[in-house]
Length: 561
Image 1: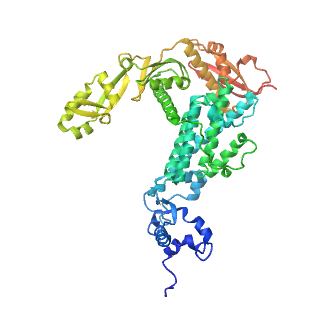
Image 2: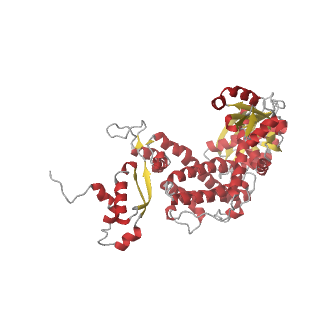
Image 3: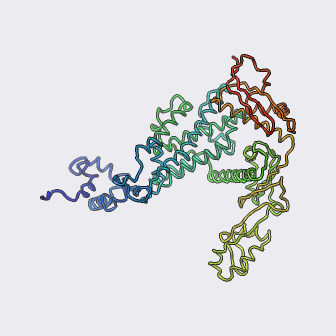
């Protein structure tokens, strides 16, 4: 064996790639100088002493600068057991099966949202790819499908074609519309800044957080509004316009990471973009940020929505844990929101329509009177205090537990308190906020997350129970429609017959008689007595439901032309 003397170390050949590929300096001098140094290069961490090193050495020797402006380094993808992936050991799932089961987009997003993009090691698990589909793609896809269904519903009811309105950014008056559009604008601003710096590891988590906000907050809280349940088509259109802008923009932002999914979604949304819309989302440029918002607007909107979510979450806990045999579809008479910050209460007041809808409550009262409604309890962290205070921990523990309401509120506001000659901070204790036990009853129950106290009144009357039963009937009709695989825009006639139990105090016959408006609003049709059904009626689906001790039979019938 004889060495060929003309061949240098092969890594130095690959390190000469920027020059060799253009035969520089012997030709293409202008072309080389226009492109050098490269905007970015990307390779694995194992190239630190290989390609990265030789690129840097040769370029520094020749030009006194690196051969690249940005360097993206990925770590090593390991098997689930932490070992190197090996064909011999077969300790990795078949990539073709992963792609066939979950799609290339799910695999790509799973990898670029992992520590591997920070040049760290990463244990690959196929369950993680499945998680991307379940937690990101499906909610996002359902939001798009919900938009399409309700845009069609709007067109059918209004007789007008749905077309995008870019001025929704400045014309939006609804608090949640403003919030989601401000969040979107902040996201575009962040996206452009971080992508320009090649920070994949900050961009992807923020995109996924936004999708969660979109699906779990905006769409969830505005479902009835977009459906036009209350008959307000103007409000329905505003909400649909906001949702369309978000979905359309998200297709552009996610295009580099989930190219196949967004191409499908853009194709579905394209009809609302107008006749001059591009054929593919990949022909579009990354959106520019809008100039409609002022500095601080997004923070104010976030504060308001955080207040809304906090109240609703606490309200749901109370309804779930304390409702007894009261259905969630049965409205409650009153909710009391208690907080020390008037700005928090103002935010809750501005968004009370959403709170009433989500908790199913008729009235909302606001109060800053923590002394009357709340009870604070300080639970010292023995481990933290013992480590810092030693023998004095016991005396401080006793003093902290003995604090009165005024002292605890001052401690909560200032973040620290002086006891037994020692300064104790909030991070050394757990501050529990509970409903004042002196006013708590079976019907008057509260819940707090440590910030806001939410109290619900479970006292029932005939009007509330009647409306609850009417909603149960409505739910049964909608479930029957779903079982019949009807589209939301499909019109049907609804017929009913009732078997009231003699021991039932609230008769279903009376409920139906009193709830015509509820059925018209939620079902967009009337409930018609079964004996009025035509003999030749085309029944789509029929089922009998039990409500309490009574029964109601519901039949869906094709309307006659």
